Image 1 (cartoon, rainbow, N blue to C red):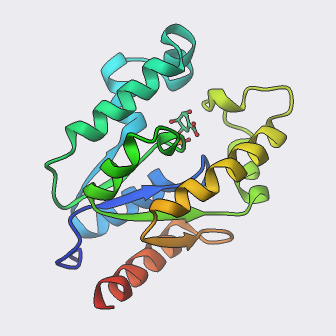
Image 2: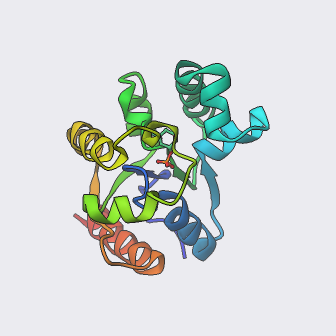
Length: 178
Ligand code: S3P
């Protein structure tokens, strides 16, 4: 399987729990593409988990690292990139994401996102008194930003990773044909 010719890279954006990393890995596996994940690159650099990086160095350092990862990928071609859900909160990242390739916004309804993230302590921004409300607030604040840079929007609610991957690849074909 190949990415349609005009597609430089495939960039997955969306809120925590929408499945960017799992779906990205699935697409990469199908086409033997290289897969990158901004969170994983930062975790490896620091040898720490995301919550540890937030608590030791703070969110600002994490956001600077996210930006540097995007800068470092500027010259890539043929990769699948899963991004952290907050990457769009820095406006300096938006043109970089657009330049990198076709941007796919993976969505899911808030209930689905909540069910996917609630057991997982690895999301420092959801360590609040009312994480479900925090999720609702952040996801509604960010939705217009995701939308503003997305070439394609794919809803993953109720679908397996393989089904979402199929849906993305179908939409990608339609997108490049049109
Ligand atoms: C964040 C999302 C996380 C991670 C960090 C901050 C956010 O990535 O980058 O916890 O601000 O939404 P995932 O979207 O992969 O969970």
